[in-house]
Image 1 (cartoon, rainbow, N blue to C red):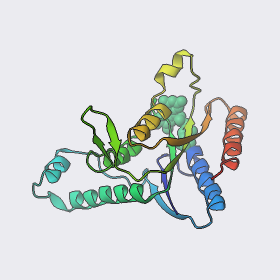
Image 2: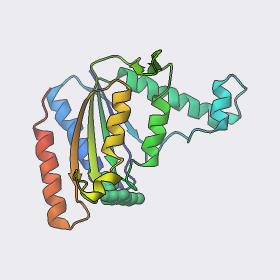
Image 3: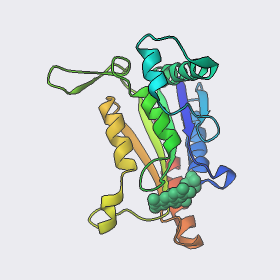
Length: 204
Ligand SMILES: Cc1cc2nc3c(=O)[nH]c(=O)nc-3n(C[C@H](O)[C@H](O)[C@H](O)COP(=O)(O)O)c2cc1C
């Protein structure tokens, strides 16, 4: 059994999403003792943003330089890792109301027509990924984005990730959320404890 573990926070050892995603992985190892883990730290090593050179390479033009060549290989590795993963764990902080750009770069490499999905004649997406994958998101944010409040309209974070995974046919998505992290130590610690309790309650 394989687990793909992705982090994207730029806050290093102070990161809450990194701590929570690591705890999720430990919990999954307890549930599945045969688990093999592949780790990607997108904050320290992410693929390049897509560019005209990528489009040219994909359309069969000669590659421009070693950097692009390595980057295309990295994109292939991202795809293989997603195909092979039974469980995908993502540490996803909110930056400016959405996900970190490093995580968006990963999404740009794995949401690829003809690779992970195709369009039906009616324009709906059809997954090309193996079925049965589980996605667990460690979601962190400074504010609180309760539904039916004015700030909820700015929530393009979990909703975006859920939309992307649903588009790829991945519907088994669990969000472990710690929010209100900018509201002082007590609120922050309570939010983290609540998230940790959800992690402890994860089942196969
Ligand atoms: C660059 C940056 C942008 C942020 N933007 C938002 C935001 O739009 N909304 C919010 O609620 N919190 C925002 N925050 C706060 C983070 O979501 C919060 O600190 C969270 O704990 C970050 O996750 P991490 O601890 O895993 O790095 C931002 C933090 C950073 C560093």
